[in-house]
Amino acid sequence: MLQEQYRTIIETLHECMVACNHCYDACLKEENSNMMVECIRLDRECADICAYLEQAIGRGTPFIFDLAQVCASICEACGNECQNHQHEHCQKCAEACMECAKVCRNLIA
Image 1 (cartoon, rainbow, N blue to C red):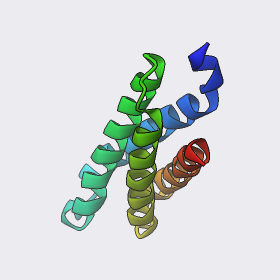
Image 2: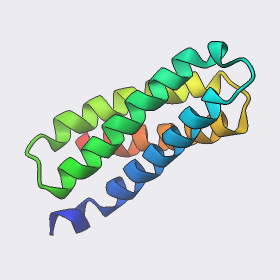
Image 3: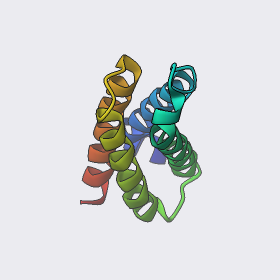
Image 4: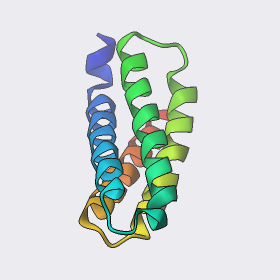
């Protein structure tokens, strides 16, 4: 079964999506959310691509490697941005994003 073959990446994508959605929401509530604009934008981009790839794998997309490459790039960009902020939610998001980028890159290697 395709989903069993990709169980680890599906779980990692889901964890990253959840972390990005949490970071997005928490950034909007920060006192100076204007300083968080790029983080907020990338959180949305990352959560969306992770959710899409998770769903696409579930339906057996023939574009898994192409999507994984895009996902890895977006996750890395989001992780790098989140690392610039000392908020706990940003740091946790950065960890999830970097792990997801690694898993996506391992898939296409």
